Length: 108
Picture 1: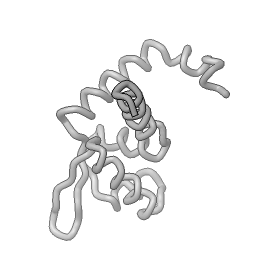
Picture 2: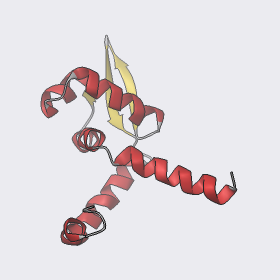
Picture 3: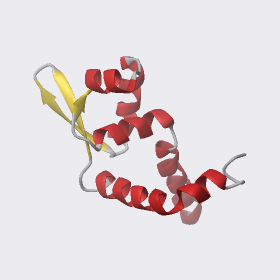
Picture 4: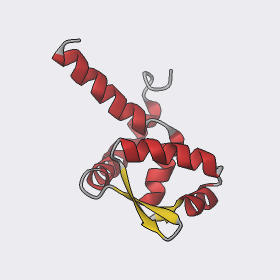
C-alpha cells in the first residue's frame, strides 16, 4: 500500500468513526459534560450494550477518554482534539446546514 493510499484510508476511517449516528449522539451528549454508560443510555434511550460498544470504539480511536469513579467509568470528550473538532464542525454546520441537507451526492 502506498503512503498516499494508506493516508487516504486513514482519513476514511476517521470520518467513518464519525459517520455513525449512535457515536455522533454520544459525542454530542458528552459536549455537555462527562457521563457514565448508564447516564448516556438513559439520556439517549439506547441499550447499555450499544452505548458500551460505541464508547469502546470512540475511546480506542481517541475521541473520548475515561476515568474510574468507583465502580463506574465516566467518559469525557478528548479536550485536546475532539472538543475543538466538534466546535469547528458546529460552526461549519451553522453556516452550511442547508447545503448539507440539500446535497444530491450525500442523499444517495
